[in-house]
Length: 80
Image 1 (tube, rainbow, N blue to C red):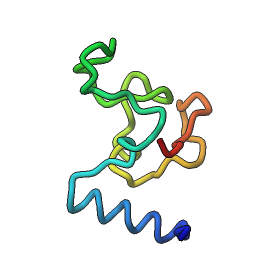
Image 2: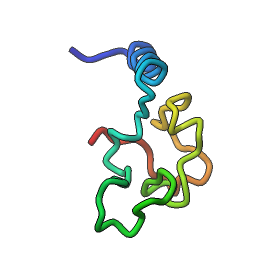
Image 3: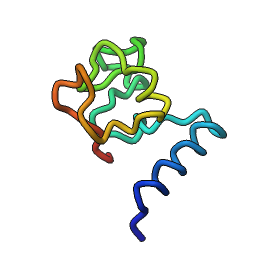
Image 4: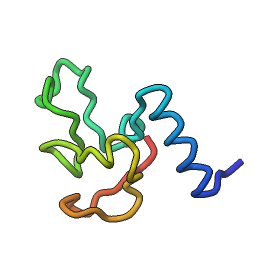
């Protein structure tokens, strides 16, 4: 069953509030901080769009980053 955009937003907001969840963790472009071989290990949460750090409003799900965002190099959320 495909969710509407509103249902998708509501589920992500609820997940963030109750489970300290970030949609970024499920994006193909997200850097896995647990990968000890990663050059970005122990750096702030980052991704291909924001290699220097993901903006808070995106990381915490207030902006699902499905549309272009300033500084994202044309890279948006893609389900992993």
